Structure formats: C-alpha cells, structure tokens
Length: 144
Image (tube, rainbow, N blue to C red; front, side):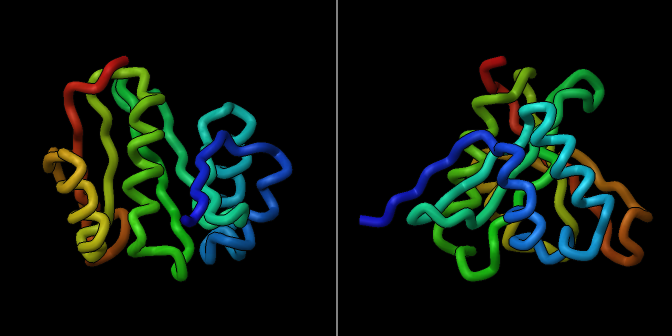
C-alpha cells in the first residue's frame, strides 16, 4: 500500500519545492510566495513514499475569508487523487466558513476537481492571463 502524507511545509522544503515546481524554477515571485507561505505557516506539502510531490498554500485575507492560493502536484503524480487530498487538508485550516480559490479557464482538470469537492462557481476575473480568464470558486459550510 502506497504511503501518502501531508504536513506543514518547513524552511528545509523550500529548495525542493523550487525544483519541483516548473514555474518556481525560473520565477522569483513564485519562490517568494513559497517562502512567505512557509514562514507564515500557510504552506503544506504532500509526500508520496517519502518523496515530496506537491504543495498547497492557503491565505486568510481575501475579503476577510480564506483563499487557496496555489495547489501544485508534479506532473508524474497527477491523476492519483493527491490534489483533492491536499485540498481537503487545506480546507481544515480555513479561518472562514467560506473558502475561495481560482483556476484558469483552460485548466479543465482543476475545474472538475473543485466541482467534485463541492466548490461552486463564484465569478470570473479577466486580464490576469491574456486570453485565459481566471474562474473563481467557493465552498461554503466549512468550520472556521
């Protein structure tokens, strides 16, 4: 049976997360986001057989509500239910009863994951990524 564990990210994880995330490898802003999340205890990592395969970041200042800033699972580990598992753990750390998140319109997989987890559409933000609007989702009824 495969071992999956989810834990709070530690400073020692930062370099591994940069290497794992194809965007963070070349994007100082993404690395800064990861560093802040770790420092502020808002980052969580998921390990598969003791190998770090993904991470998630939650924040708590989106119009007074919590927001899933980022869910990242490495390409080889996608499609095995790890993303939904990580989202469920992050939901437990929401400081509000409604949890928001967003994904690009082109990211059909994430849209299906969110809908399967009970998230509902909440709006659209244009002009963040040209030609690929950001779809906002919300899940109500969480324990804060």
